[in-house]
Length: 191
Ligand code: FES
Ligand code: FES
Image 1: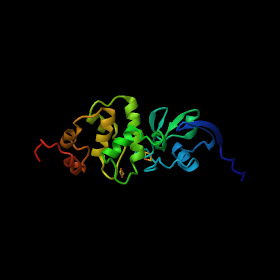
Image 2: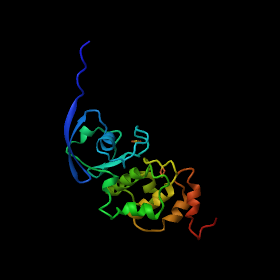
Image 3: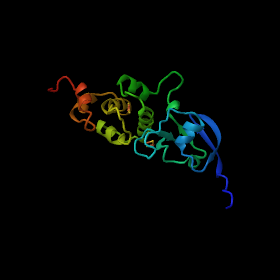
Image 4: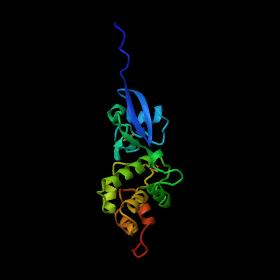
């Protein structure tokens, strides 16, 4: 039996969080594995590894992508931003600050993907209401069920400050968020 051919490897250039990287990758290496396993950028999380949870969301050229579903070689010459690249030194990104203010996480596992997805959402410019935020963030799952707070945080930055609380109280994002919705019920609404 002839020996197996050596794995196919490619030289690529990526700018990641503002830093240039010259990398040699196998053709089948997902961007997620390159970030986590080769560059130790473990802020980006692996959840399902099948494009279903959004935990691995990063930005490529300002566009949100699922890094588990895209190959690193496909982005040769590209600009990648991970959660590690959102803050400017000690200054949190406005979305990070909003997540803190709204207590928009519990375990935090989904949070890097939520944040990168929300930055992409802001770049897209399509969200005009809290319902839009819910719909356009629906690819990012949160096993802790922090959806109501996440929507509030994203809406505060993407739409602007406003009375989003009563809107959340009327329309829970998904079944199971009712308790959180009640917690932010506007005072004038009946219990
Ligand atoms: S890990 Fe990529 S979508 Fe779940
Ligand atoms: S905060 Fe735990 S999965 Fe979202």
